[in-house]
Amino acid sequence: MKTLSEASRALELGKVSSVELTEGCLDAIKQKDAELGAYLEVDAQGALKSAQESDARRQGGQSLGPLDGVPIGIKDIIFCKGLESTAASKILEGYKAPYDAMVIQKLKAAGAVILGKTNQDEFAMGASGEHSAYKVTRNPHDLNRTPGGSSSGSAVAVAAGMGYGSLGTDTGGSVRQPAALTGIVGIKPTYGRVSRYGVIAFASSLDQIGAFGSSVEDAALMLQGIAGYDPRDSTSVDRPVPDYRAALKGDVRGKRIGVPKEFFSEGLEPEVKASVQEAIGLLEKQGVEVKEVSLPHASTAIATYYIICTAEASSNLARFDGIRYGPRKGDQEGLNALYEKTRGELFGDEVQRRILLGTYILSAGYYDAYYVRAQKVRALIAKDFSEVFKEVDAIVGPTTPTTAYKIGENIQDPLAEYLGDIYTAPVNLAGLPGISVPGKPTKKGLPVGVQFIAKPFEESLLLNLGYALEGALKDG
Ligand code: GLN
View 1 (cartoon, rainbow, N blue to C red):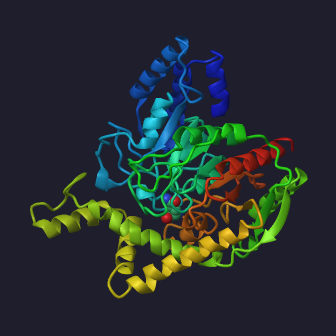
View 2: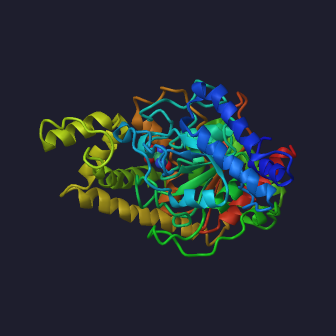
View 3: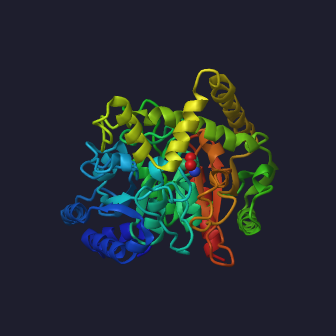
């Protein structure tokens, strides 16, 4: 059984037990994860206990729904009570989550089995998985390549059969990008659709939890499990949650889709371009109306994103001071030494780079020139999208400009890594939902992601478009 939906149906029909599915995933982790590095912590005992409880419920005719008994992985940055939550940083080494994030409360209430915590770039800063303080995650399609990031482990867990679904976070692309590079589906919901209560904050005006699955239906089921209002997250929106699986009709006739010309310019790898164009052609055959549109401020998105996210990160990460959480360094030498040594030794290079940049951007004299200005450009980027959505129902384009790059290739060149966010970060800046669905892989067999973007709270439309594309590719 490859997909979550298949596993879920088999559970329903009594063809398999949750304990069997869970043992299967735990075996896969044992066999493959030393090489792949997707998990930071595996909770075999806890998972098997939840699986047994799920099986007992089903036998008693008390199933909690499609996720009941399904084994999944959770990005380390999301709190699961009693399990370590380090955000893959040394500064939180040994820190155990004191409570469940809202999304975990919801998934547990739906009966999902939590296999463990997945690897990521430290504090979700990065796009390759190489910035974990613990280990590198490898792409199952080519072990010399990165799987993308920052939700590297969550993507690889699903892509390599070490979990039927998983959760990640997406601040500038961290769900859609690794989904694209590992050949699976990743959805980033509208800002406010999913509660972030219990998630370690990176850039609060951009962060959103998203879900991975091996198929669009899987992503729909995972999203169903986590979406909804939560008064404990003040950015959460009180709005009914539709039935996402019911939206998967596959009929997309008459839908108008915009192709932004700025998403097909310089820097886009020819094979990625060809795959996305082929996908658009397939959608046209299914009756979608395609037209070219323009997002004139798209070229400013990377600069804008990196000003806003570093500013917010410098503020959010101020709480890691060696006093309140995690290990402490230099405490014999006075308070300043304690701060300096703890933060200097226990934050990784990329995190320190962002804190320094963000602190500079927010400092007196530069605040207006950088931060305030970036907020203005952000408004223009959002306006570009709302203008386009007057003419079309959704936007389609590549998720990433290239296929997965080699491990180590960009580690000395942060800007090259940042450029990988060029098609995903604008979506976060505008607070919109986006999904990455596999297109046709390259000749070498490297996955390519096709991204759909829609108006706020139109996740159902995204899922249906993705479903139509998935179907068309299967039919050949
Ligand atoms: N690659 C982007 C960054 O490094 C996105 C990260 C994310 O979405 N968490 O900021």
